[in-house]
Image 1 (spheres, rainbow, N blue to C red):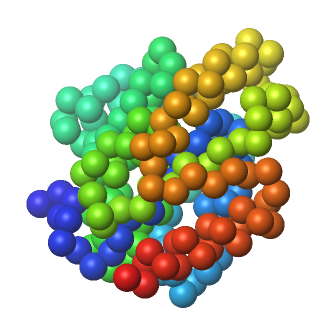
Image 2: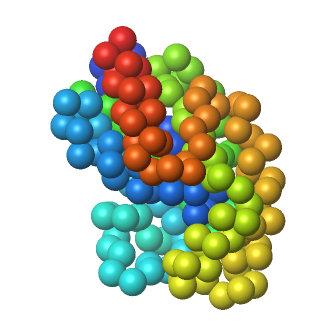
Length: 195
């Protein structure tokens, strides 16, 4: 049975507009072994960037392969973020983590985060990482040097929409000071997994 809600492991969901720093924060939390966190690797239909590897940063599929997995009911949640650009959470990945007794940590878009939170309810903690401002978000995306100006503007427009989802999350943390955000996250997640 997929995704049994009665497993010992809990679910911690991170969502944020692209460039808000959620991946940095998730990686920070994963270093704390006492939290017993295991990263849930998402699936995507985008091409790998740089040295990204299948099954490490993402499970990479072509758009047609991704659609086939949708047809097979292989996802806990998925979203077509841009045309032919899918992201999703494989049921097999969640089963693997929760069956091991670990706490699953997710780095997903806001719609996916809301869907996972709805499925798991009180067994999930949904955290929204807020950028300090749209201007700072633009600066960070430009600084990555991974996207064209057109893609950056598309991401900014999407970010403005995604910010409207923040009130649907259990916790909102503004990432304007990385050390402060780390401290807040560690406290919130430690409290949640120890309940």
